[in-house]
Structures are given as C-alpha cells and as structure tokens.
Image (tube, rainbow, N blue to C red; front, side, top):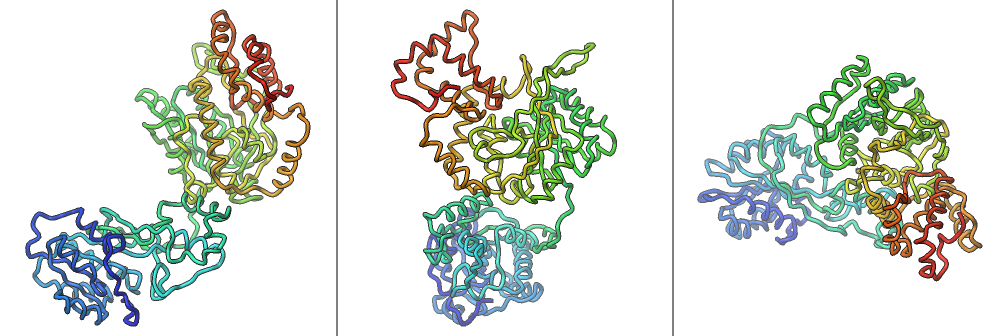
Length: 614
C-alpha cells in the first residue's frame, strides 16, 4: 500500500478527492442509516471521517497499512485498524473480519489503487463485499492522461514528483479507459462520477515549455488535438461511484497485437428513393479488382416499404458480396448523422463514402490501397469526374440518363489552399484513415446540413495531410432538372450559412501546413501587393461571384429582381460544387447586366476585390 515513509496527511476540501467522493455518496442518501457504517479502505489519516459521519449519519471504520494514520484516527475517536491489502482471498477475509456482523453502508478506496501492486485483486475483494451488503463503492485514482503529462511526454519528458499525478510511489497508472476496464473486470460498474478538474496540474512545469505555454501555436495545436481525443484532458483525478455486479470477463491489459481489419469500409447512405442507382453502385463494388472491403449500407429515415425494398436489393447481391454487407438504420438527425453512425460502426483501416448514386470504377479500391502504401495514415484522394444526370422512366421502369460527357472539373492533385476557399474533392474520391475518427475522435459536424464532407476533409487535412493520385476512379453524379439532391432540398441561404460556418471554424483552429506551403504563401502575399490580375482559376471566380451576391448593393436591390422573376427572369444562384470557370463567368456577367446592379452603382463608392473583370 502507501509508502509509510511518505506523509499523506492531506486535509479535507470540498474540491479535492475527499470532498468529491462525499458529494457522490450524498447524492444517493438512504432513509435508514441507523447502525450502518462506512468502510474507508486505504484511509491514510482519514480526513474524510468527520465530514462523512456528519453528512451521512453513519459511523466510520478506516483500514490502512500505515500505523501513523490509524493512530491518528483512533486519537480522534474513530475506529481504525492496520491492514495490508494483498491477494484477493486474503484481502476479502481480512476486510470481512473487520466488518463482522455489522451493516455496511458504503466503501471508499481513495488515493490508494495507484499504490497497489495487486490493485485488481483488491478491487475484486471490495466488489464481493459490496455485493454482499448492497453497498456503494467510491474509488479514485489520478489521471495519467492529463494533457500536461501528454504534452511533455511528446517531447521525451517524464518526471516523477514527491506527490501528485506522477507520485514516485505510484506502481499503477490509469487513463479513463483503463480505469473503467479495471472496475468492470472486478465487478464494479460506474453509477455516477465527480472527477476533480485541474486545467493546470502539478505537472504544468516548467511554465516556459513551448508545449505548455498558453500563448504558443504549438500549445494551442496540442490543446486542440487533446480536447478532441476525449473529455478527460483536464481531469486530475477520477472519482467514480460504483455498484457491484457481474464482472466483465475482459482483462485490463490489451494484447498489443494489431486487429485484423478489412482495408476499406465502404459507407453508403441511402434513403431508398433511387434503387436503380443503388443496384448500380453495388454492381460496381462487385467488380472491384481489390475486394478487401466491407460495405455498410446506412438507411436514413426509411419507412417500412422503402426499408424492405432496400433489403431486397441487398439480398439480390452475389453471395460473396452479401456476406460483406451490413445494413444499419438511422432514424434521427440530418444527412450528416448517418456518417457518424457509419464511421462509428466501420471496421476498416480506411473509410470511404460511396453514396447510392455514385459510380466507382473497377480500380477504385486498388487506387486507395496504392496511395496507402506510399503514404500510410494520410487521407487518400483520387479524382472523380462529374456527369450531369437525370432520372428517366424506361419501359415503366426507373432509369437514368447521362446528359453530356464526363467532365474533368476537379483538379488532379490536392491543394490545401484551394480547398480552404472551396471544396474540390467529392466524397467518392476520398478515403479517410480510421484513426481520424476512432483515435483523434474527429466527428462530422451534425449542425451542418450541407458541405459536411468539406468540413471533415479540411479538419482532417490540417492534421494528417492528403495523399493524392491523378487517376480517375469514379463518377460523381450531378443531378439536373427537378431531380432531388442536396442542391434542391436545401436553400441557397442554408448553403451560404454552412459555408461561412466552416470558414469561421478554420479561422479559429491552429493548423499544420504541408511541405511547400511557405512558397505558396509567399506567392499569395506578393500578389496582394500587385495590380489586380484578371482571375482565371475557378476558386477565384467563385470568390468573385460570391462577392457580388453578398454585396450590400445586390441585397438592397432584391425587390427589383423579384419583379423581374415575376415576368420570367431567372435567379442567379451560387452552387458550392460549381467549378466550371465558364459557367462562373457567365453568372458574373449576368449579374452585371441586370438593371438592379447598374442602378446601385452609386452605392459602390470604393473599389472592392470583386471589381476586377472575370
């Protein structure tokens, strides 16, 4: 147990382990506490004894290996016994003897577990006693995964101290996940928690360390990454209230071997409205040259009839492909919700989004694998061509028609700076490494109703980078006419709001830039000081068009355009997926030819960045 040479005579405080433990026990009061007592295992000097007995109305028994602490309790009028925790059976017998025939109210094991060589055995013994008496157990232990420890360890610094998170007498270290596994393995199941929070722990030294300093870019980046990992980065000590139950037959340690996984998890969102394209997408998967993948078909808000039709399509797949398919229902949320559910369920090393109207070519999976071999762990990107399409009826059967050729409008290489202006990578051309979601805990932003894939790509690219191939591996269908798509379901204002939200998010987070970024930044800064140059890139044209549509003169003249639309005029829309330079130029020229733009010229008194010629 605790080192007798170390003084653990810590005072009771409402905001330390003792106060937090008592608060947990007080949340679950018993009507009848007469004759019951609290067992404090590893009690030290038992500074919780006075407030506990006063608050809960029970008597107190403390046990500890340190004679000084036991003597202090006795001098203050409390029952205490000297007891060494060892193997499970011995500990169970010794504690049972100390309890005798009395009624047990609750048990605590505070600031003790981390000092025990046989901690798992002690937990099992305590769980058995708690089960016999139907008593709650409150357990605490320091958090070795506190952000301060991780930041320093990333640079090779690990420093034991006289006490605190890395007390030199600690023999076992716990993160939240390990602590929960240890409790469950012993048969202790968390009912409530009241962890002690310390933004700056006792490991927050030296204050000049760049990883700890609050004002550094490095510190901000590490803080952002740690905050996404889990919610325990600022937890100093875990304090958990447990009830005894069946032990979970899972060891607290892990094997350390890599789990066998399929290379790719293919996530297909469907609403069951385009079964003919779903059949086509599955047929394309059946023709992949690399079949090391699984398929997760996520049905979103399906009624019974549509669900049955989707399941029938899946059942009609070849047997070997059907064995790779899992069907998942999602009943809530917007179009982003199925992505989080699907990514959570995915087993693959990489996860790709293949919507039910996309067309992957035979080398789609194989190209992703080639990129992985070259740059493991990066986001993988291949090229998708865009084809205008519409749904048609052929012999009373639903079908589709491609209207025009396959347009190579998305760039063959990934450019982070271009993507910070607008998305140039349809989801079908991307494969995200599993670790982005499952280890770094980056989730799709469910507050976004559109452009959720662009937001996720940017956040991932800032941390992981992107490996890109110029190979064309898929068709991204662009639905024309009145066929339903995200462009028709969501209003232009909704698209603009989501776009601005993503830009704001990128402005508020520290980012990592890939090699070669310094050169591009220098070029951009140099261009800023030069005379205006006619934009030729699609992203610059998009910015130009957006400047027109967001300008005050365009907004105040909206009533004039409403009258024009009453007599057949068409609205100029900004589509976030539009990258064809000529289409963008035509829209800009249409705006400048309108009466409302010409009449509001006096409002544009100074030269704006959108005043250049397209």
